[in-house]
Length: 291
Ligand SMILES: NC(=O)C1=CN([C@@H]2O[C@H](COP(=O)(O)OP(=O)(O)OC[C@H]3O[C@@H](n4cnc5c(N)ncnc54)[C@H](OP(=O)(O)O)[C@@H]3O)[C@@H](O)[C@H]2O)C=CC1
Ligand SMILES: Nc1nc(=O)c2c([nH]1)NC[C@@H]1CN(c3ccc(C(=O)N[C@@H](CCC(=O)O)C(=O)O)cc3)C=[N+]21
Image 1 (spheres, rainbow, N blue to C red):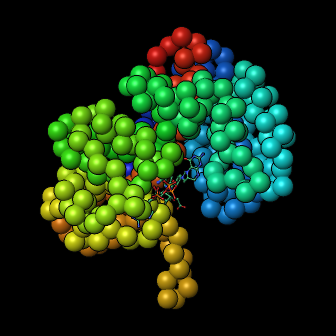
Image 2 (image 1 turned 120 degrees about the vertical axis):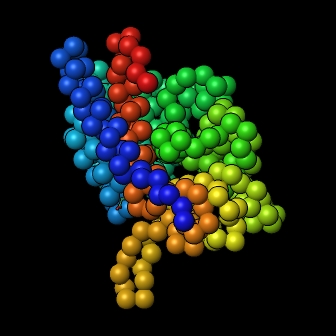
């Protein structure tokens, strides 16, 4: 029976340490770190994530500069707001909540964020640095997964890691981070032939697919470490809605050595790394290293 990797507990511990650090930083530099989250439209899932991020900011002492726009906000209007936030000395991190309504060009907006304020680590400059193994702002979910693996004492060097999913937000940067940590990395996706044959090779298996309970026990090698990035809201027969991951948790738990739950696994770490990136940018501005 697998050990549960408790992301919620690690997030809580890291956020408590951040709160203490921010008290000191505030005394030293006379202001708190600031994060601006831009949300467009009223997608309920996005609204819930944004609320979660704002609550976490408050908890650790980061000032939120949340901006909510109607679904028909224009590209030009949003670009202007990003330009202003880039110039605003109270703001250390800027994030554009994805997905955006169809008429907007998300890539152009992300590219407009100053790379030093790119709290999501999605700007081409920061992704390029990641690719080259240079320090910098890193995508929150993959960075959170790496912290979880570290905290759970998972050996990475030399192991076979299979990442299912190749999005810019999760799969691709995570594969690069695992490679940097000397795993032998296989990236799987919707065009992968015989996915089960690939996933069965994994010592570390990461699912970032977006399909509820897609990974079943017969796809997992006995003793593997399984990280479930998926967040899927499903409605059961009785009409009750709940969150499930991309992994059949009960089935896979029986054969894995360690596994992350949903909720309470990767999700809380994503939020924690967003706070981390905001503090990192703040410190860099004052010439201090924050790790
Ligand atoms: N826990 C957290 O903090 C976060 C969770 N998420 C969740 O993680 C999941 C993935 O998110 P994201 O990366 O943004 O999603 P995307 O939809 O951008 O990417 C999904 C990936 O899964 C691949 N895929 C789809 N179907 C299959 C299949 N049948 N077999 C193998 N691969 C498949 C796709 O392949 P292809 O490229 O070929 O289309 C794609 O690369 C979602 O559930 C999302 O909600 C996302 C961000 C943060
Ligand atoms: N620019 C951008 N950056 C993102 O990082 C980003 C995004 N857009 N769009 C959407 C996805 C999704 N995402 C999550 C964050 C936290 C939880 C989280 O905290 N989940 C809790 C559960 C929360 C609940 O109960 O609803 C958990 O898993 O325990 C989940 C998912 C960030 N994303």
